[in-house]
Amino acid sequence: MNKMIDSPDKTGANNTHMTGRDETQPLLPIHMTEKKEDGYDIYPFHPLGNNQIHTGYPSLAAWMATQKLVLIDGYVGIYWHTVQASLAQQFNLLGLKVTWHYTAALQKDAASIQQLVAPFTGSEGDVWGTKCTLDITAFFDMEKLSSLPFDQTADLNIVIGTGATLTHPHAPLVYLDIPKNELQYRMRAGTANNFGSNRKDTATATYKRFYFVDWVVLNAYKQTLLHRITVMADTQWPENVSWMFSTDLLAGIDRISHSSFRVRPWFEPGAWGGQWMKEHIAGLDKSAVNYAWSFEMIVPENGVLLESSGNILEIPFEWLMYYRHEAILGRHATIFRYEFPIRFDFLDTFDGGNLSIQCHPTLDYIRKNFGETITQDETYYILDCKDDAVVYLGFQEGIDTGDLRTKLENSRDEGIPLEVDTYIQPHKARKHELFLIPNGTVHSAGANNMVLEISATPYIFTFKMYDWLRPGLDGKLRAINIGHAFNNLDFSRQGAAVSAQLISLPTISEQGKDWQLIHLPTHADHFYDVHRLEFDTTITIDTKGCCLVLMLVEGTSITVTVGNEPPVVYHYAETFVLPAAAGICSIKNNGEKRVKVIKAFLKEEHPVFSKITSIPISYAATQQ
Image (cartoon, one colour):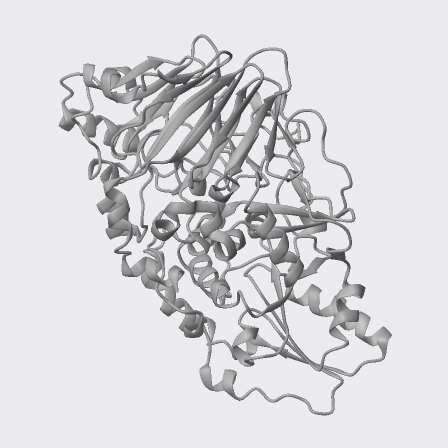
C-alpha cells in the first residue's frame, strides 16, 4: 500500500472555496444523537454520558474569562486566525480587556527552520524522507520564549499558537487538535501548511514533511502535555469548535480502553480504485470517481469519536495510546509503547484496475533509510471478489532478474508495456483466502478484488516497479521506484515455493457444537497472526492480555458485550478492537446464518520484538 503518493487527487465537485478543504467526503456532523442501526457506520461514536462535551466559541470563551492567563496550544493545520477572531468577538461581548501573544512571532525565521528540517525531507522530488530527531524547541527562539512580557493591566492574557505551553509552566492549557484526514483536506486546498513554513509546496511535498517532520515532532510534544491539558478542543469545523475538560476526557478514554471500540474510518480515491465501497457503504459521496482505500484502522491517521448530550468531539487515536497504552496493548505494551502495531484497511479494485507491481522494504532497510521501527509486512484477506480476480504474488520459476530490471526500466523510460505474467505469478482470488506478503515480496492486487489488508502499521513505504503505464487521477504518471525495489526484493520467492509458503493454509484449531476457530497461519516474518471465528449463536473469547483487532467478514451483524458495559452492535465489514484489558467478552450472532469474524493479534514472541527495544535514533524523538 502507498497512500502518500496515490491519494492527493481531486475527485470531483468540492466545497474548497467555502470550507478551506478539498475533498468530497463531508465534514463530520458536530451534533449526532442516534447511532446508525443498520449497516456499516461511517461515524461510529462512543457515548460518554451527558454534559461532558460543549460546543461553540461562546461557551469556551465564558470558561476562559474566569482565568487570568490561558495558553492555547495545538497541532499543525489549525486555523489560528479564525480561532482568535471567534474568541475575541466573545470577549468583546463580555467587556474584557484581552492581550494576545502569538507563538508564530517567537519562532525562528522560516528559512532557518527549512534548513533545520532539510536533512529529514530528502531532496526535492524524493518520495520519502527519514523520521525527524528534532525537539519542538528547535523551531523557536529560546530567548523570546523565556522573556514573553505579560500585560498586567489586562483582564486576560492569552498565548496562542503551536508551542504556547513552552511560555509558562503552570497556566491553564487549552489544546486544539484536528483529525489527520481533515488536516490533509486543508493541505490539498492550500489552507494548511507545514509547521514554521511559508513555502507553497505541492501536496505531496507537504505531506512528506508532515509525515517525517511535523507529526513526529508534534506528537512527541503532545506526550509532554499529558498532565498539563485543562481543555481538549476539536477544531475540524472551520467556524465552530467542540471541547471538553481533560478530567472528563480521561474518564472516557479509560472506559473505551477497557471495552470494545471503533475508530472513525475515512475513504480515499486512487488510480486503480473501485466501486465496491460505493455500493456497500451508505453515506459515501456517490459522485466520487472511485474509492481505492478505506482507512479502517491506520491509526496514525484515524480518530476516535466521542459523544455527550448529542455533541461530538473527535480525538486523534494517539491520545488513547498516550494515556492508556498498557490497557490497550497488554503484555505487548512494553515493546510497542505508544505505537499501535496492527493495521486494517480496504483496497477496492471492483470494476477498477490493478494495483502497481510493488514490494516493501526489509526491516534493516526501513530503519536505516527512513527511521521507522518496524516494517510493512502485509497480508491480503479476500473479503469479496469476482470470478476473474487474481492476486499477483511471487516470481515465476527461473526468473532472469537482469532481464526483468531492463524491462521495468524500459517501461518507465520509454512507455513500453511489461508482460507481467511472464515474470510475476497470478493466483486466482477466492473469498476468505489469505495471501501472505512479508517484506521483500513482489505483489499486487488485481482488478475486481475487495481486499482487507491486514498489516503491520507502516503504510507509505511502497516501492512501485510497474504501474501499468496509467496516470494517477491528477493526470500525471505516478513515481516508480525500481532502485529501492531491487534493493529489497527476495528473488527466492518464486515457482512452487510461492503457493507453499505465501498462501495461508487454514486449519481448525478448536471447535464445538456450533462454532469453529480457524487458524490462518501467517509467515515467519509476520509478528502478528490471524484467526477466523465461525459460529452460529454466541461465543466467548478471552483477550488473555493481548489486543485483538477484529472484523465481521461474513454475516449481517454481531453484538459484543464486555463486562458490565452496554452491548455494542458491529455490522458487516466494520473493524473493531478488543483491548487487552477487556478480558473475557461474548460475541452474539444477530443473524440466522453462520457468521465469520477475522481476528488479528500479536504473536507471543517474535524476533522483531527484541529489535524494537533498540529504537533507532531517528525514531527516538517520538518516545520521549
